Length: 316
Image 1 (spheres, rainbow, N blue to C red):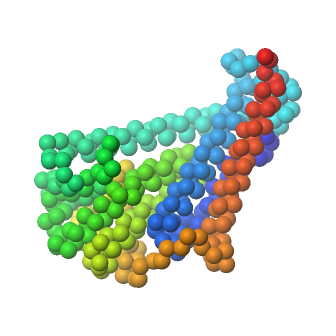
Image 2: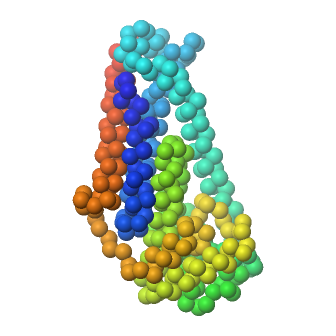
Image 3: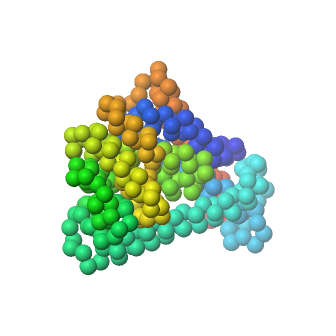
């Protein structure tokens, strides 16, 4: 295995250039898919890397439950420089697993709390809560293709009719495209490898931009959506701490609002399947793609190598 097993831990750095450029230059839908898939693959490869190193490290610990042949001198020679890294990988992998577990539990708790708040209300696609606090968010539901748009009476009372239509179109876009899954994947990826945090931030913005563009197409007015976003942000800013939290996609809180408004005041972005290599975003995308491919190959190579070595060292 050698140094190649360590590459997946640092190759997420190759995705940094594409994070900011994808926000600015790619269509939000394309950017969301690209960044989410890249983050998920890189996080999976780095986690596999830690798991492989942990096997090596565990084999060197006295009293380990693994076969005795795994700690023979021949095995140590076949996996050079991995003994210290393997022992360090044990607490690192435990930290990753516990962090991802806490995130999933918090995500589940937020969803349950939001679902309990709708108890007793008619099962319609839109749920209006009698609450003076201004908030709106999309709530996916299990077993249903589309969830519900949850909005407070305090938010609706402060928006004009056209702005309300923009709000509902925005939240329905979140539900239709399953943006909560994009957000969950990149949050888990950032817990698995801290180098992927810029991609988490970028996807949090691009899914909001994606929903903004979908809403603009529904209401046929980019200025109306921009005005609704700005007004909702000002309203929500006067009442901080309300809403469902980061686990669910909301209308006003996530993403830099001035950038979203400015983007809506410009022409709609064009969707490109793959940017040209002779552009800044093209270079960044190809660099991230190359880093992702190398990471996947390194993980596969290390896994196969360790499997063959340990299989040879394990008595029948």
